[in-house]
Amino acid sequence: QKEVEQNSGPLSVPEGAIASLNCTYSDRVSQSFFWYRQYSGKSPELIMSIYSNGDKEDGRFTAQLNKASQYVSLLIRDSQPSDSATYLCAPLNDYKLSFGAGTTVTVRA
Amino acid sequence: DGGITQSPKYLFRKEGQNVTLSCEQNLNHDAMYWYRQDPGQGLRLIYYSQIVNDFQKGDIAEGYSVSREKKESFPLTVTSAQKNPTAFYLCASNQPGGANYGYTFGSGTRLTVV
Image (tube, rainbow over all chains, first blue to last red):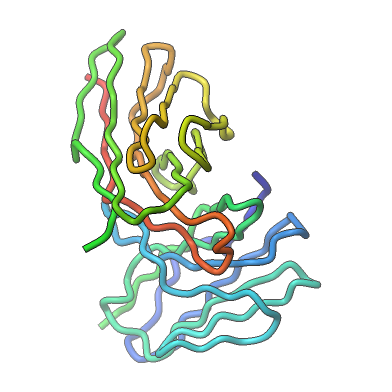
């Protein structure tokens, strides 16, 4: 598996603000990218997927992909306390996901 | 509802003992995976299987074994050769060729050596 790096946390944001999460990956052949949210002690749950360069929006979440720069990001708008979790970036290659260590987000009420 | 069931939720292993973690899915997925998660680290791939009766080692397979005799089942055995087995173990599945879909995860098994 190839290296996946995420911005180190924890990231603390006030309620209603935008949380910005970054991820770089080393395997150029990766074509599909996924963001998972993991609450403490729980298993990861899929929140976003992106396959093409550009932006993809789903509710309060926006994923951005730049394959030339090997960079993918996740924006959480209007952050809520329920968004407090660890977010995992996962490129897909050869049907297997590689995971970053995650960025922990804390939303302050 | 379709999903992945892992059992037990908590497991305690004594030194020198083999233990088996169960993973069952009813999603009709061909591929299944086992990951290990340690505090502050990402998920690391232990073994994966893309079809029944076939499986491959992941990045950290030493001290582990698996079988894939049925499409819906992919049990993981943690052997006594695994010197530091305390971790959170996650089973996942997906459909190869369905490149637009990420994994579905089970709820995990937390293994502790006592």
